[in-house]
Image (cartoon, rainbow, N blue to C red; front, top):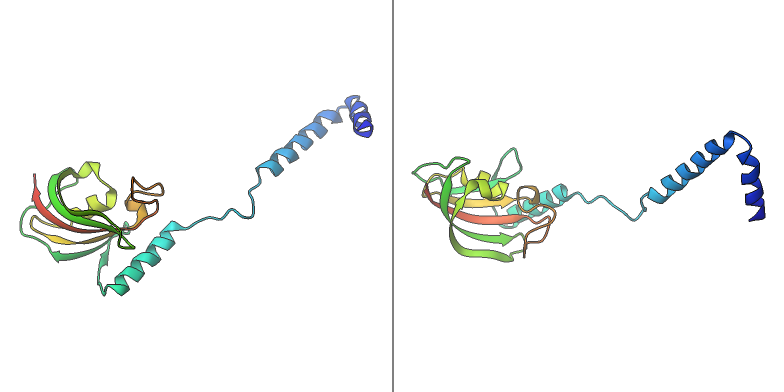
Length: 167
């Protein structure tokens, strides 16, 4: 301790003191902010893609994929009006997670497409009134990394949906 005090007392007499203090605090800052080697980046996009591909194989599905990453299967395109981005629609749906956990069963609802998750908004616009199909929605088009209520973060969502009407 006396040795360190002596060094600082000596350095005070020179202009190098500022340089040494700056260097000391810079090293201290850099070492305290370095990340632990235990921290790892989790690539949820790749995880979701693997989960979706496994689900497709296990269920013998032949979906199409949009540019955004939404997978869809149109069982029946429908014959009525096709919704726009700003449409209010009446749909029936069953919603499950990729592991089969149900979060909406036999639900019938009227929704504003501007107020729902991106994957469902995009998918519903693929149908005409009376149309139905399956939407496989990756987390980034669903509830994101944080999830929503009983839906965990980074979850793939599966919607079996029927478009009843477009208002």
